[in-house]
Length: 165
Length: 247
Image (cartoon, rainbow over all chains, first blue to last red; front, side, top):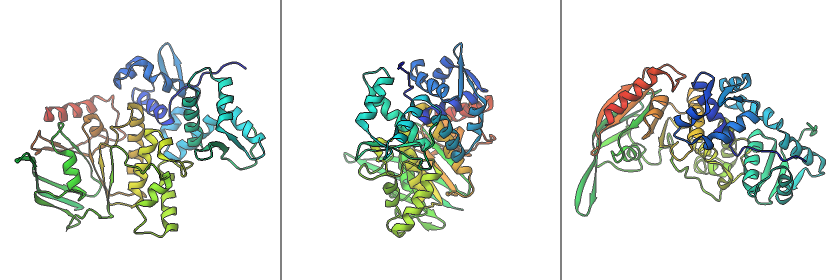
């Protein structure tokens, strides 16, 4: 299986980035945007990658451009934003795979160690733990996959018939 | 009038010397005020906020809330802290339920906690511990906890300064969404910040304090339409105006 890249950015950072691009008229130079926040370009790259992966931005020639669904997200209230993000997070290939694995398991739960082993087959990094935290940040916010830190298990949140995506 | 800060002064003692931190502060807080208090470092902004919520006594003067002297346990005033102030051994829901413990039954507290967890978009995080949350999520819990007591006046001490720049941007917009929702408390907000852009983005009124001893040098009504755009030249005229009063 081919190694994937996964952006280490929280949902809040991604929305913050989209809001800043929106203030600039819906398209902004990435370096200028970083400068506006007193950040180095590589500090906002994960959020740009996250926005792109979730279908909220197109990046070309150093410019970040909002997609129509990003505009819809920014015009929405907190509840509706969450619904839009849920659909987009559920569409991310790696999360689809993880969710389908949980659906196939009889108790719809998976030990963290097994998740890390799975992630290592998909993401090439020595710091797989931090990717685990980011993925759980996304899936918890989206209400797709939860994590119990006491039992160190992830679990499927959506209990309705678990259709595979 | 919601609250009145009348001739408030504060003096601290250090090595036998008396240091005047705040000098004759007068502020009237009305319904729908979103006040940001700005000023140079050490001007007494946070001290003033602590006096307003009743956590600290002024050396002279008084703070009245709906005509009565403010008390530290006033359930109609709540606070959001810079460093979130969450109990690490309690879950998100338990952190919020805790502030309702003395006034609500366990069942009521649970329902109210869930209502405000949902309002800030944290549903799904009820049983999560603070250590598992990003800074932005922790401060959302801070907002939910402060709103759960259904305060009339919400006070915030640098609520975005512990967050990274992008998360902070996102949370400011979410705070404005909550503020704009007529079904949500509070009636007025007082926020302390050192960030002038943040103040112009959020407030409909900015109070500028002088360097120590903090005195009010300006009380400005921010006449910018919402939603505000940080790239708007008019926005920056206001930012420049406030900066010019501080430096």
